[in-house]
Image (cartoon, rainbow over all chains, first blue to last red; front, side, top):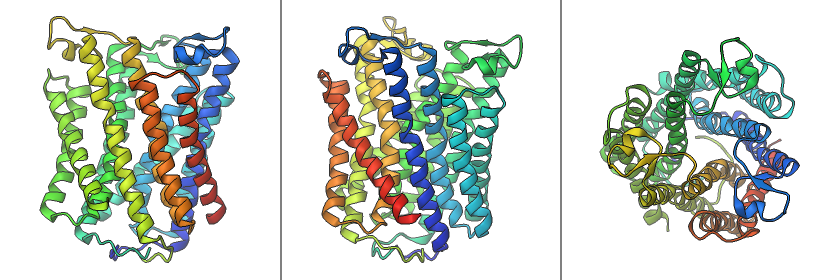
Length: 149
Length: 149
Length: 149
Protein backbone atom coordinates (compact mmCIF):
# COMPACT_ATOMS: atom_id res chain seq x y z
CA UNK A 1 0.00 0.00 0.00
CA UNK A 2 1.28 3.43 -0.84
CA UNK A 3 -0.31 5.15 2.07
CA UNK A 4 1.68 7.90 3.71
CA UNK A 5 -0.09 7.43 7.04
CA UNK A 6 2.39 6.10 9.52
CA UNK A 7 2.25 3.73 12.45
CA UNK A 8 5.17 3.34 14.81
CA UNK A 9 6.47 -0.19 14.25
CA UNK A 10 6.80 -1.05 17.93
CA UNK A 11 3.24 0.14 18.55
CA UNK A 12 1.99 -1.85 15.57
CA UNK A 13 3.70 -4.98 16.92
CA UNK A 14 2.05 -4.36 20.31
CA UNK A 15 -1.30 -4.07 18.53
CA UNK A 16 -0.85 -7.31 16.56
CA UNK A 17 0.33 -9.15 19.68
CA UNK A 18 -2.70 -8.08 21.70
CA UNK A 19 -5.17 -8.83 18.90
CA UNK A 20 -3.90 -12.44 19.12
CA UNK A 21 -4.33 -12.38 22.92
CA UNK A 22 -7.90 -11.16 22.46
CA UNK A 23 -8.59 -13.88 19.88
CA UNK A 24 -7.26 -16.50 22.34
CA UNK A 25 -9.53 -15.05 25.02
CA UNK A 26 -12.58 -15.37 22.76
CA UNK A 27 -11.54 -18.90 21.70
CA UNK A 28 -11.48 -19.84 25.40
CA UNK A 29 -15.27 -19.32 25.52
CA UNK A 30 -15.82 -22.54 23.53
CA UNK A 31 -14.23 -24.90 26.12
CA UNK A 32 -15.90 -22.85 28.89
CA UNK A 33 -19.31 -23.48 27.26
CA UNK A 34 -18.48 -27.14 26.56
CA UNK A 35 -17.43 -27.64 30.19
CA UNK A 36 -20.86 -26.47 31.39
CA UNK A 37 -22.68 -28.49 28.71
CA UNK A 38 -20.89 -31.74 29.61
CA UNK A 39 -21.14 -31.11 33.36
CA UNK A 40 -24.92 -30.79 33.02
CA UNK A 41 -25.32 -32.98 29.90
CA UNK A 42 -27.43 -30.26 28.27
CA UNK A 43 -27.04 -29.54 24.57
CA UNK A 44 -28.52 -27.25 21.94
CA UNK A 45 -28.91 -29.86 19.19
CA UNK A 46 -30.73 -33.23 19.19
CA UNK A 47 -27.78 -34.81 17.32
CA UNK A 48 -25.45 -33.74 20.14
CA UNK A 49 -27.74 -35.05 22.89
CA UNK A 50 -28.01 -38.37 21.03
CA UNK A 51 -24.36 -39.13 21.74
CA UNK A 52 -25.21 -40.04 25.35
CA UNK A 53 -28.43 -41.42 26.80
CA UNK A 54 -28.32 -39.16 29.86
CA UNK A 55 -28.14 -35.93 27.89
CA UNK A 56 -31.01 -33.67 26.91
CA UNK A 57 -31.81 -30.62 24.79
CA UNK A 58 -32.53 -27.48 26.81
CA UNK A 59 -32.12 -23.76 26.23
CA UNK A 60 -32.58 -22.20 29.64
CA UNK A 61 -29.88 -23.65 31.90
CA UNK A 62 -28.61 -20.64 33.90
CA UNK A 63 -24.94 -21.75 33.99
CA UNK A 64 -24.75 -22.42 30.26
CA UNK A 65 -26.66 -19.27 29.33
CA UNK A 66 -24.32 -17.23 31.54
CA UNK A 67 -21.27 -18.39 29.57
CA UNK A 68 -23.13 -17.78 26.31
CA UNK A 69 -23.98 -14.22 27.37
CA UNK A 70 -20.32 -13.58 28.22
CA UNK A 71 -19.39 -14.95 24.78
CA UNK A 72 -21.96 -12.72 23.04
CA UNK A 73 -20.68 -9.74 24.99
CA UNK A 74 -17.23 -10.47 23.53
CA UNK A 75 -18.70 -10.47 20.02
CA UNK A 76 -20.37 -7.13 20.75
CA UNK A 77 -17.13 -5.51 21.89
CA UNK A 78 -13.88 -7.15 20.82
CA UNK A 79 -14.03 -7.06 16.99
CA UNK A 80 -15.05 -3.39 17.10
CA UNK A 81 -12.16 -2.53 19.39
CA UNK A 82 -9.72 -4.29 17.05
CA UNK A 83 -11.15 -2.41 14.06
CA UNK A 84 -11.18 1.04 15.62
CA UNK A 85 -7.83 0.61 17.34
CA UNK A 86 -6.21 0.15 13.92
CA UNK A 87 -7.64 3.52 12.89
CA UNK A 88 -6.50 5.00 16.21
CA UNK A 89 -2.91 3.86 15.56
CA UNK A 90 -3.03 5.92 12.35
CA UNK A 91 -3.85 9.10 14.30
CA UNK A 92 -0.24 9.33 15.50
CA UNK A 93 -1.11 8.81 19.18
CA UNK A 94 1.32 9.12 22.07
CA UNK A 95 3.09 5.73 22.26
CA UNK A 96 2.69 5.30 26.02
CA UNK A 97 -0.97 6.26 26.02
CA UNK A 98 -1.77 4.02 23.05
CA UNK A 99 0.13 1.02 24.46
CA UNK A 100 -1.54 1.37 27.84
CA UNK A 101 -5.01 1.83 26.36
CA UNK A 102 -4.57 -1.43 24.42
CA UNK A 103 -3.39 -3.21 27.58
CA UNK A 104 -6.27 -1.69 29.54
CA UNK A 105 -8.82 -2.99 27.03
CA UNK A 106 -7.30 -6.48 27.01
CA UNK A 107 -7.17 -6.61 30.82
CA UNK A 108 -10.75 -5.34 31.10
CA UNK A 109 -12.06 -8.06 28.78
CA UNK A 110 -10.18 -10.86 30.54
CA UNK A 111 -11.52 -9.64 33.90
CA UNK A 112 -15.01 -9.31 32.38
CA UNK A 113 -15.02 -12.97 31.35
CA UNK A 114 -13.70 -14.14 34.73
CA UNK A 115 -16.24 -12.24 36.83
CA UNK A 116 -19.09 -13.04 34.40
CA UNK A 117 -18.57 -16.70 33.63
CA UNK A 118 -15.81 -18.27 35.72
CA UNK A 119 -16.12 -16.99 39.29
CA UNK A 120 -19.33 -14.97 39.49
CA UNK A 121 -18.68 -11.86 41.55
CA UNK A 122 -21.45 -9.40 42.60
CA UNK A 123 -21.87 -6.20 40.69
CA UNK A 124 -20.31 -3.72 39.97
CA UNK A 125 -17.36 -6.02 39.09
CA UNK A 126 -18.76 -7.00 35.72
CA UNK A 127 -20.28 -3.61 34.94
CA UNK A 128 -17.02 -1.86 35.71
CA UNK A 129 -14.81 -4.18 33.66
CA UNK A 130 -17.28 -3.91 30.78
CA UNK A 131 -17.34 -0.12 31.01
CA UNK A 132 -13.54 0.19 30.93
CA UNK A 133 -13.41 -1.75 27.66
CA UNK A 134 -16.38 0.16 26.29
CA UNK A 135 -14.92 3.54 27.27
CA UNK A 136 -11.55 2.69 25.69
CA UNK A 137 -13.25 1.78 22.41
CA UNK A 138 -15.40 4.92 22.53
CA UNK A 139 -12.36 7.12 23.15
CA UNK A 140 -10.49 5.60 20.21
CA UNK A 141 -13.51 5.91 17.90
CA UNK A 142 -13.83 9.61 18.78
CA UNK A 143 -10.09 10.17 18.20
CA UNK A 144 -10.36 8.54 14.76
CA UNK A 145 -13.39 10.65 13.86
CA UNK A 146 -11.68 13.87 14.97
CA UNK A 147 -8.48 13.01 13.06
CA UNK A 148 -10.01 11.74 9.83
CA UNK A 149 -13.03 13.98 9.39
CA UNK B 1 4.41 -4.04 4.36
CA UNK B 2 5.99 -4.27 0.98
CA UNK B 3 2.77 -4.83 -0.89
CA UNK B 4 2.49 -3.19 -4.27
CA UNK B 5 -1.31 -3.07 -4.07
CA UNK B 6 -2.38 0.53 -3.82
CA UNK B 7 -5.20 2.36 -2.11
CA UNK B 8 -5.90 5.99 -2.83
CA UNK B 9 -5.03 7.85 0.37
CA UNK B 10 -8.17 10.00 0.39
CA UNK B 11 -10.32 6.91 -0.08
CA UNK B 12 -8.46 5.10 2.68
CA UNK B 13 -9.04 8.03 5.02
CA UNK B 14 -12.75 7.94 4.14
CA UNK B 15 -12.78 4.22 4.93
CA UNK B 16 -11.08 4.64 8.32
CA UNK B 17 -13.38 7.55 9.21
CA UNK B 18 -16.53 5.56 8.45
CA UNK B 19 -15.31 2.43 10.25
CA UNK B 20 -15.15 4.62 13.37
CA UNK B 21 -18.68 5.92 12.66
CA UNK B 22 -19.90 2.33 12.34
CA UNK B 23 -18.18 1.36 15.60
CA UNK B 24 -19.89 4.32 17.35
CA UNK B 25 -23.21 3.16 15.92
CA UNK B 26 -22.70 -0.35 17.32
CA UNK B 27 -21.54 1.06 20.68
CA UNK B 28 -24.82 3.00 20.83
CA UNK B 29 -26.69 -0.31 21.13
CA UNK B 30 -25.44 -0.76 24.72
CA UNK B 31 -27.12 2.40 26.13
CA UNK B 32 -30.21 1.62 24.01
CA UNK B 33 -30.45 -1.82 25.65
CA UNK B 34 -29.70 -0.40 29.10
CA UNK B 35 -32.42 2.24 28.66
CA UNK B 36 -35.03 -0.49 28.04
CA UNK B 37 -33.68 -2.65 30.89
CA UNK B 38 -33.85 0.18 33.43
CA UNK B 39 -37.21 1.44 32.14
CA UNK B 40 -38.68 -2.02 32.72
CA UNK B 41 -36.31 -3.12 35.51
CA UNK B 42 -35.70 -6.40 33.69
CA UNK B 43 -32.21 -7.90 33.65
CA UNK B 44 -30.45 -10.97 32.27
CA UNK B 45 -28.42 -11.77 35.39
CA UNK B 46 -29.53 -12.35 39.01
CA UNK B 47 -26.59 -10.25 40.25
CA UNK B 48 -27.89 -7.30 38.17
CA UNK B 49 -31.48 -7.68 39.38
CA UNK B 50 -30.23 -7.81 42.98
CA UNK B 51 -29.15 -4.16 42.78
CA UNK B 52 -32.77 -3.04 43.14
CA UNK B 53 -35.68 -4.73 44.90
CA UNK B 54 -38.16 -3.93 42.09
CA UNK B 55 -36.12 -5.58 39.34
CA UNK B 56 -36.46 -9.11 38.00
CA UNK B 57 -34.76 -11.56 35.66
CA UNK B 58 -36.66 -12.18 32.40
CA UNK B 59 -35.69 -13.11 28.84
CA UNK B 60 -38.81 -12.42 26.81
CA UNK B 61 -39.57 -8.74 27.17
CA UNK B 62 -40.51 -7.61 23.63
CA UNK B 63 -38.91 -4.16 23.87
CA UNK B 64 -35.60 -5.44 25.22
CA UNK B 65 -35.47 -8.36 22.78
CA UNK B 66 -36.12 -5.96 19.90
CA UNK B 67 -33.02 -3.89 20.74
CA UNK B 68 -31.03 -7.11 21.19
CA UNK B 69 -32.11 -8.35 17.74
CA UNK B 70 -31.06 -5.05 16.20
CA UNK B 71 -27.70 -5.39 17.98
CA UNK B 72 -27.25 -8.98 16.74
CA UNK B 73 -28.12 -7.86 13.23
CA UNK B 74 -25.26 -5.35 13.49
CA UNK B 75 -22.88 -8.16 14.48
CA UNK B 76 -24.06 -10.19 11.49
CA UNK B 77 -23.41 -7.39 9.04
CA UNK B 78 -21.04 -4.62 10.13
CA UNK B 79 -17.74 -6.47 10.81
CA UNK B 80 -18.06 -8.32 7.50
CA UNK B 81 -18.63 -5.09 5.61
CA UNK B 82 -15.54 -3.54 7.24
CA UNK B 83 -13.47 -6.62 6.32
CA UNK B 84 -14.60 -6.93 2.73
CA UNK B 85 -14.54 -3.18 2.10
CA UNK B 86 -10.80 -3.19 2.85
CA UNK B 87 -10.35 -5.83 0.12
CA UNK B 88 -12.59 -3.80 -2.18
CA UNK B 89 -10.38 -0.70 -1.73
CA UNK B 90 -7.49 -2.80 -3.03
CA UNK B 91 -9.36 -3.53 -6.30
CA UNK B 92 -8.65 0.01 -7.53
CA UNK B 93 -12.33 1.04 -7.56
CA UNK B 94 -13.68 4.31 -8.95
CA UNK B 95 -13.26 6.85 -6.13
CA UNK B 96 -16.76 8.30 -6.36
CA UNK B 97 -18.45 4.91 -6.50
CA UNK B 98 -16.38 3.55 -3.61
CA UNK B 99 -16.93 6.63 -1.43
CA UNK B 100 -20.66 6.60 -2.06
CA UNK B 101 -20.99 2.86 -1.45
CA UNK B 102 -19.32 3.30 1.94
CA UNK B 103 -21.66 6.20 2.78
CA UNK B 104 -24.65 4.18 1.55
CA UNK B 105 -23.75 1.26 3.82
CA UNK B 106 -23.26 3.52 6.86
CA UNK B 107 -26.54 5.36 6.21
CA UNK B 108 -28.42 2.07 5.70
CA UNK B 109 -27.20 0.69 9.03
CA UNK B 110 -28.04 3.88 10.97
CA UNK B 111 -31.55 3.86 9.44
CA UNK B 112 -31.85 0.13 10.16
CA UNK B 113 -31.23 0.70 13.86
CA UNK B 114 -33.64 3.64 14.04
CA UNK B 115 -36.56 1.86 12.36
CA UNK B 116 -35.84 -1.41 14.20
CA UNK B 117 -35.19 -0.30 17.75
CA UNK B 118 -35.79 3.43 18.26
CA UNK B 119 -39.00 4.39 16.40
CA UNK B 120 -40.56 1.16 15.13
CA UNK B 121 -41.82 1.74 11.58
CA UNK B 122 -43.90 -0.83 9.62
CA UNK B 123 -42.17 -2.94 7.01
CA UNK B 124 -40.64 -2.64 4.44
CA UNK B 125 -38.62 0.15 6.18
CA UNK B 126 -36.41 -2.26 8.07
CA UNK B 127 -36.21 -4.85 5.30
CA UNK B 128 -35.20 -2.22 2.78
CA UNK B 129 -32.52 -0.59 4.94
CA UNK B 130 -31.15 -4.05 5.78
CA UNK B 131 -31.10 -5.05 2.13
CA UNK B 132 -29.19 -1.94 1.02
CA UNK B 133 -26.41 -2.73 3.50
CA UNK B 134 -26.48 -6.41 2.58
CA UNK B 135 -26.40 -5.68 -1.17
CA UNK B 136 -23.47 -3.27 -0.76
CA UNK B 137 -21.47 -5.91 1.13
CA UNK B 138 -22.39 -8.57 -1.44
CA UNK B 139 -21.31 -6.33 -4.33
CA UNK B 140 -17.95 -5.59 -2.67
CA UNK B 141 -17.36 -9.29 -1.89
CA UNK B 142 -18.01 -10.22 -5.51
CA UNK B 143 -15.67 -7.44 -6.74
CA UNK B 144 -12.91 -8.72 -4.46
CA UNK B 145 -13.41 -12.31 -5.65
CA UNK B 146 -13.33 -11.27 -9.33
CA UNK B 147 -10.20 -9.14 -8.81
CA UNK B 148 -8.21 -11.50 -6.62
CA UNK B 149 -9.12 -14.90 -8.04
CA UNK C 1 2.29 2.75 6.45
CA UNK C 2 6.00 2.72 7.02
CA UNK C 3 6.10 -0.68 8.63
CA UNK C 4 9.02 -2.89 7.78
CA UNK C 5 7.06 -6.06 8.44
CA UNK C 6 6.59 -7.87 5.16
CA UNK C 7 3.87 -10.02 3.68
CA UNK C 8 4.44 -11.98 0.48
CA UNK C 9 2.18 -10.34 -2.10
CA UNK C 10 0.81 -13.61 -3.49
CA UNK C 11 -0.03 -14.78 0.02
CA UNK C 12 -1.68 -11.47 0.82
CA UNK C 13 -3.80 -11.76 -2.34
CA UNK C 14 -4.79 -15.29 -1.28
CA UNK C 15 -5.77 -13.92 2.13
CA UNK C 16 -7.90 -11.09 0.70
CA UNK C 17 -9.56 -13.48 -1.76
CA UNK C 18 -10.55 -15.92 0.97
CA UNK C 19 -11.76 -13.21 3.34
CA UNK C 20 -14.27 -12.31 0.60
CA UNK C 21 -15.24 -16.00 0.24
CA UNK C 22 -15.81 -16.16 4.01
CA UNK C 23 -17.91 -12.99 3.91
CA UNK C 24 -20.03 -14.50 1.11
CA UNK C 25 -20.46 -17.64 3.21
CA UNK C 26 -21.71 -15.61 6.18
CA UNK C 27 -23.98 -13.52 3.93
CA UNK C 28 -25.54 -16.80 2.74
CA UNK C 29 -26.95 -17.33 6.26
CA UNK C 30 -29.52 -14.56 5.71
CA UNK C 31 -31.32 -16.25 2.76
CA UNK C 32 -31.00 -19.62 4.59
CA UNK C 33 -32.80 -18.12 7.60
CA UNK C 34 -35.36 -16.36 5.42
CA UNK C 35 -36.07 -19.63 3.55
CA UNK C 36 -36.98 -21.34 6.85
CA UNK C 37 -38.98 -18.34 8.08
CA UNK C 38 -41.09 -18.16 4.90
CA UNK C 39 -41.48 -21.94 4.68
CA UNK C 40 -42.93 -21.96 8.20
CA UNK C 41 -44.31 -18.41 8.19
CA UNK C 42 -42.67 -17.76 11.57
CA UNK C 43 -41.07 -14.39 12.25
CA UNK C 44 -39.26 -12.63 15.06
CA UNK C 45 -41.07 -9.30 14.80
CA UNK C 46 -44.81 -8.47 14.88
CA UNK C 47 -44.34 -6.02 11.98
CA UNK C 48 -42.93 -8.87 9.86
CA UNK C 49 -45.73 -11.30 10.75
CA UNK C 50 -48.28 -8.60 9.91
CA UNK C 51 -47.34 -8.81 6.21
CA UNK C 52 -49.30 -12.06 5.86
CA UNK C 53 -52.34 -13.28 7.77
CA UNK C 54 -51.02 -16.85 8.08
CA UNK C 55 -47.74 -15.86 9.74
CA UNK C 56 -46.99 -15.74 13.45
CA UNK C 57 -44.32 -14.64 15.91
CA UNK C 58 -42.42 -17.51 17.54
CA UNK C 59 -38.92 -18.01 18.94
CA UNK C 60 -38.57 -21.74 19.33
CA UNK C 61 -38.98 -23.28 15.90
CA UNK C 62 -36.25 -25.95 15.72
CA UNK C 63 -35.44 -25.46 12.01
CA UNK C 64 -35.14 -21.69 12.26
CA UNK C 65 -33.15 -21.82 15.51
CA UNK C 66 -30.77 -24.33 13.93
CA UNK C 67 -29.88 -21.89 11.12
CA UNK C 68 -29.55 -19.10 13.68
CA UNK C 69 -27.14 -21.18 15.79
CA UNK C 70 -25.05 -21.90 12.69
CA UNK C 71 -25.03 -18.15 11.96
CA UNK C 72 -24.00 -17.31 15.52
CA UNK C 73 -21.24 -19.92 15.33
CA UNK C 74 -19.92 -18.06 12.28
CA UNK C 75 -19.86 -14.81 14.26
CA UNK C 76 -17.96 -16.57 17.05
CA UNK C 77 -15.28 -17.88 14.70
CA UNK C 78 -14.91 -16.15 11.34
CA UNK C 79 -14.08 -12.54 12.27
CA UNK C 80 -11.46 -13.74 14.75
CA UNK C 81 -9.85 -15.98 12.15
CA UNK C 82 -9.68 -13.05 9.70
CA UNK C 83 -8.12 -10.83 12.37
CA UNK C 84 -5.53 -13.30 13.62
CA UNK C 85 -4.66 -14.58 10.15
CA UNK C 86 -3.55 -11.07 9.22
CA UNK C 87 -1.12 -11.13 12.16
CA UNK C 88 -0.04 -14.63 11.15
CA UNK C 89 0.84 -13.42 7.63
CA UNK C 90 3.22 -10.94 9.28
CA UNK C 91 5.12 -13.76 11.03
CA UNK C 92 6.81 -14.71 7.73
CA UNK C 93 5.14 -18.16 7.54
CA UNK C 94 5.95 -20.84 4.99
CA UNK C 95 3.86 -19.94 1.92
CA UNK C 96 2.50 -23.43 1.32
CA UNK C 97 1.56 -23.98 4.94
CA UNK C 98 -0.07 -20.56 5.23
CA UNK C 99 -2.02 -20.93 1.97
CA UNK C 100 -3.26 -24.38 2.92
CA UNK C 101 -4.21 -23.35 6.45
CA UNK C 102 -6.35 -20.55 5.01
CA UNK C 103 -7.98 -22.98 2.56
CA UNK C 104 -8.50 -25.49 5.39
CA UNK C 105 -10.27 -22.92 7.53
CA UNK C 106 -12.52 -21.80 4.67
CA UNK C 107 -13.39 -25.39 3.75
CA UNK C 108 -14.08 -26.30 7.40
CA UNK C 109 -16.51 -23.40 7.79
CA UNK C 110 -18.38 -24.16 4.55
CA UNK C 111 -18.71 -27.81 5.60
CA UNK C 112 -19.76 -26.69 9.11
CA UNK C 113 -22.67 -24.69 7.70
CA UNK C 114 -23.76 -27.50 5.37
CA UNK C 115 -23.81 -30.23 8.03
CA UNK C 116 -25.32 -27.88 10.64
CA UNK C 117 -28.03 -26.07 8.73
CA UNK C 118 -28.50 -27.43 5.20
CA UNK C 119 -28.33 -31.24 5.35
CA UNK C 120 -28.20 -32.23 9.03
CA UNK C 121 -25.65 -35.03 9.43
CA UNK C 122 -25.12 -36.93 12.72
CA UNK C 123 -22.15 -36.03 14.89
CA UNK C 124 -19.16 -35.94 14.76
CA UNK C 125 -19.52 -34.24 11.32
CA UNK C 126 -20.29 -30.83 12.77
CA UNK C 127 -17.96 -31.17 15.75
CA UNK C 128 -15.07 -32.13 13.51
CA UNK C 129 -15.58 -29.35 10.95
CA UNK C 130 -15.90 -26.85 13.79
CA UNK C 131 -12.75 -28.13 15.48
CA UNK C 132 -10.65 -27.87 12.31
CA UNK C 133 -11.55 -24.21 11.97
CA UNK C 134 -11.04 -23.63 15.69
CA UNK C 135 -7.67 -25.43 15.70
CA UNK C 136 -6.45 -23.42 12.70
CA UNK C 137 -7.34 -20.15 14.42
CA UNK C 138 -5.73 -21.31 17.67
CA UNK C 139 -2.52 -22.30 15.85
CA UNK C 140 -2.30 -18.92 14.13
CA UNK C 141 -2.97 -17.02 17.37
CA UNK C 142 -0.16 -18.92 19.11
CA UNK C 143 2.22 -18.26 16.20
CA UNK C 144 1.44 -14.53 16.39
CA UNK C 145 1.98 -14.47 20.15
CA UNK C 146 5.31 -16.31 19.86
CA UNK C 147 6.51 -14.02 17.06
CA UNK C 148 5.38 -10.68 18.46
CA UNK C 149 5.93 -11.12 22.16
